Amino acid sequence: MIELRPYQKEAVEHALKHRRSVLVLPTGTGKTIIGAFFLKNLFRRGLIKKALVLVPTRILVEQTHKVYSKLGIDSEMIYGIHPKEKREEMWKRAKVAISTPETVYSDLELVKVDAVVVDECHHAVGDDAYAKVLKELECDYKLGLSAYIPKRRRNEIERLIGKVREWSTKEVKPFIAEWIAEVFETPFSRREMEVYDEIDRRRNIARKSEKLIYTSALKFFAKDGALALKESLSRKNKLSKLLEDLKNDVLKLRDLHKLRYLFRALVLYEGFSKSIVFVERVVVAKKLAEILDEKTDYRVALVIGRQREKMREMLEEAKQADVIVSTSAGEEGVDLPTADLLINWSNTSSPLRFIQRHGRIMRKAGKDVKFVVYLVTPDTIDTDDLIASIDQAKKIIDINIDRDVLEELWRKSRRHKIVEELSTPMPAEWIEEITGRTRSEVRFALKKSAEEGELIYIYTHLGKTYVRKDCIDKLEQFKEFLNPKHVGKVKIRLNGRTKNIIGDYKKLREELSKFLPLPKLEITVIKKSGEIEEYDFRSYNFPIDKPEVLDVVLKNALS
Image 1 (cartoon, rainbow, N blue to C red):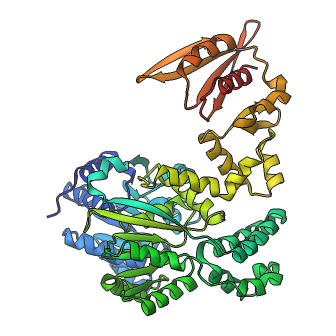
Image 2: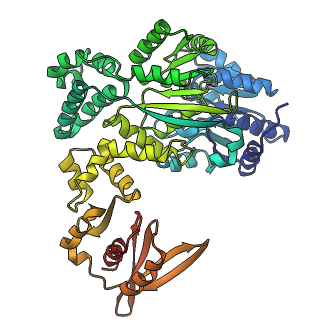
Image 3: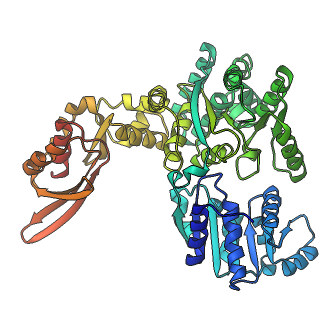
């Protein structure tokens, strides 16, 4: 009999108490077991008679069925591959049915259950089959399980399933493997960078509808190598039409500029038991597996696609392999063998996928210390995406990369170059137009640069108006927005206590100067007009580390 870990026991008790809930725990912490014990307790207490377990793929149907069987739970796998008549019998017979949302949605009139467990429940939004099923399925008990719920999806998921409860990495730390991360810069050659810069230049001046196409080309090239771009240009599509005159230049480039760094990582951590290399494009994954098989003594396995029979065969090969080369097919829930070396050939901008990849090394098995290597092309969109995913993922899992390395990466990124334009104060919309960067790129750069203390902003008739901190004197052109005349209220935390300070500009400046540096400042502005008081709220989400910065912020807030 499996004995639940303390956090697993707490999770099961929480789910039982609240009847409908979403549990968010780091990858590798045994969420499948939590779901199983949730149902086991409901059956034991006589609260339910039939249950459904939703998982995203057929492979996971089989893996979940194995876990439930080991725990003595009578479950049945129901696939869309079975004819409808047979599935009707199976739905009637199954005490616990394990199935994919697509199959369940096609059989909704047959599915009558008292409880549902939703694995990888972050999918349950919009037109996804998960969401469609949950909108129609009526049952008393619902449990969602995930490693990460993006903020924009949270409300919809809570409506369909239940309130979210999160466990931090610290809460489950004794059960997650320690791991150390290292960044290997994989620079382009001079000619490769010239081609990249030309595509980037075209993107910056392109119409909005074409920007995404150019962005895709940049991602293929920087993340996966010229081989991925060559394959895209070999097809008849909008991308090949836009880059028609560059095809010959691209064809002359080496296929895989990251290759020697991959070998370097394998040599550096040569004591590894098993390594997983995550790659975005199938053509690149196949090429890497072929090269590794030919040029090394490693047993190499390739995991691509999602066809059930082929995937089963691939996973069997992966168990025996030293190095597994996998596309996104191996990221989500698929039970790849536990590894002690994870190599990210293609960096992802998605924090969800970033976290799922790291789940491959976070299980407590084998070595005490494991390693993650990020192969990143500096001064490209590859760096931008790695920084973006780390920035989000670090809220969920520990990112064991040296802070100095991350800061250096950020300063080498293309998005950081946006900050260089801010020697003159301007709003985000102007920056988009001047740089040619997309709205999301500019917003990310401004937010991160503010958090890092590189720039500040004030509120003007243009909206938030940004400027580099070393050019703060340029804000004088906005004198009318730096003319304090109201009273403000500020709350600051000191030694665990909240201190309220109320006063005009002079009083607030005098009081707050004693507590510099402040991580940020939020001010409630009190505007009096006769007997009437109006309240406004101003938030300055950047470090207030110098008297001149505090001065500008207070003048702006109270003007």
